[in-house]
Amino acid sequence: MQNSQTISEPTRTSAIRTKTGNPGPVPAPFWPWLAGPAWLLAALLTWKLPDGDDFPDTDRFALLLLAVGLCLLILTATRRLKGRAPWALALGLGLGLWEVVQAKFLLLPRPFFGTPQDLLDVFLTDWRRLGDSLFHSLLLLAIGYASGSVLGIITGVALGRSHHVRYWVRPLMRLIGPLPPVALLPLTFVIFPSTRLTGEVLMALAAGFPAAVLTWSGVSAVDPAYYDVARTMGASNRFLVLRIALPAATPQIFVGLFMGLGSSFAMLVVAEMLGVKSGLGFYMQWAQGWAAYPNMYAALLVMSVMCTTLMTLLFKLRDHFLKWQKNGLKW
Amino acid sequence: MVISPHPVSPLGLTLSHISHSYDMPSGTRPVLDDVSLDIAPGEFVALIGPSGCGKSTLLRLVAGLETPDTGEVLAEDVLVTEPDPSRIIMFQDPTLYPWRTVRGNISLGLDIRGERNPEAVAAAIRLVGLEDFAKAWPHQLSGGMAQRVALARALINSPRLLILDEPLGKLDSLTRLAMQTELFRLWKRQGFTALMVTHDVEEALLLASRVIVFSPRPARILADIHVNWPEPRHRENPRLQELRAHILEQLETGISNIAAS
Image (cartoon, rainbow over all chains, first blue to last red; front, side):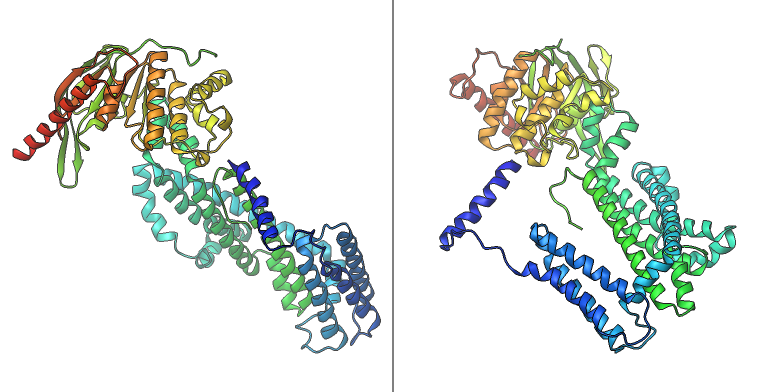
C-alpha cells in the first residue's frame, strides 16, 4: 500500500513536466555555490579590516570562517549541501555582517553586545567550566525529569484504572498540579536539606504533573472493547495495563512528556539561578554578575543547543514508539 | 496446507432462565427476560431481533464478560463466571490494536498465554488469506481485511465456541458476501460451535443451522427455527424465501405487540 503511494508520486510529477513542455534535465542551480564564498568573504573581512578595539582571537575566528567556507565548497562540489544551502549562505553573510558592525566599526553599545571573536574566545579559554556546567545541568535535569516522568506515568495509569486512586489522588492533583512549581521554591528550600535535592524535586514535579494528567486522560480514553478482546483470551490485569492501556495511551503520554520537558527546562534555569551552585544557569548568573557578557551568551548558546538536542531525542523516541501511527509532526 | 489452528471439539451451551438488567440514570432497564436456550455442540446459531433488544448482552454473558442477574450460563455443565479462551468473542468493529502489526494482532492470544508458535500464527494468517499483509499496520487495511484479521485472531485460540456480535455488520455488501462464505467455510472446517447476532435475516438463513428470533427489549425468545437444507445454500432457494418471510412476520408481530401494550 505504501509502495503504491511512493511509486505514484514521481509518475505524476513527470506527467506535469511533459505537459508544460520542459522534458530536458533541470540544470543544477548555481547559487548553492555562493554559500562557501560568503564564508570566505567573511574570513577575508575579519582578517584584513583592522579591529576597532583590542579583541582576542581575531585571526583564529578568520581561520574558522575560512575552514567552514572551504568545507562548504567541498560539500557543494559533491552535491551534499542541497536544501541547507540557503541557511549556510545566510549564516556566512550574517557572521560577516556581525563582525564588520561590531568588531570593526563598534556600532552597537558595548560591552552588552559582544563580537564573534569574543564568543569564540570564551569557548577556547573557558570550555572546561562550560562543559562542567553543562554536565551538571544535564545531571540535574536527567534525575529530575526522568523520575518525575516515570512517577507521573505510573500515577496517570493508576488514576485511569483504579477508583480508589482516583478518589484519593485526584483532589491532591487538582490542588497542587496547576501551581507553577517555581512558586514552591521558598517552601522547598526550607523542607529539603540541599538545594540540589530541591531542584530535583521541583523538576520532578514540573515534569510529573503533565505526564500524569495526560497519561490519565489517555488511559481513560482506551476503547473498553480493547480490554474485552484481551480478557476473553485470558489476559491478566497486568497484561491489560502494560500491554493495552500503556501502548494505547502512548500518543497522549508523549504529549505530556513534551510539556513536562518544557517546564523542566524552565525549572532548571530557575533552580540554578536561585540556589544550585553549579550548572549553566549558575554560570549565566555568575557571568552576568561580572558583566562578562560573552560568557553569558556562550552559556545561553550551550543551553539552547542542549535543550533542542534533548527535544530532538524525545521526538526520536516518540517516532520509534509511535511508528504505527499514520503521521506525526516533524521536529 | 498446514492444519493449524486445528479442528476442535465443539462446545455445548445451556442458558437457563437468564434475566439481566442495566442500571441507567433513569433507573434499571431490563434487557433480558427469562431466556432459556440449549445449543448443541457444533451448531451454528443465529440470533435475530430488533436493535437494542439485548442480543449483544446475551453474547457478553456467554463470553463471561458479565454475569447474569439471575439464571445461569453453562458451558458443558460448567458454570460460566469469567472469560475463557475456549469461548472467543468477535465484535462488529474489528477492534485491532493499532500499535500491533497484523501478525502481532493475530498472535495476541498466544502472547497473553506466553506461548510462542510462529507456525500457528503463519497458518492463521494463511487461513484468512492475508500473507502479504503480515507486517502491515491496522490503519493500512480495508474494513474487510481488518475483520479477517479479527477472525484469524479469534481462530488462533482454537475456540470451541465462536461468539459473533454482528461481525459483518459494517462491511460493504460485496465484502460481506465474501466474508459470509469465508465464515461458513471456516465453521465447516474447524468444527466450532458458532453463536452469531445479526440483523440480516438472509445472512442468518444462509449461514446458521438454527435461527432464534427475539422480541424487542427486554428480549424473550419468539421463535426457534431449525434450518435443515442441503448445501451449498442459495439465496434463490424458495424455502429460504419462505422462511425469511416467516421470520420478518414474527419480528413485526413482536414489535407491534409491544406498541399495543
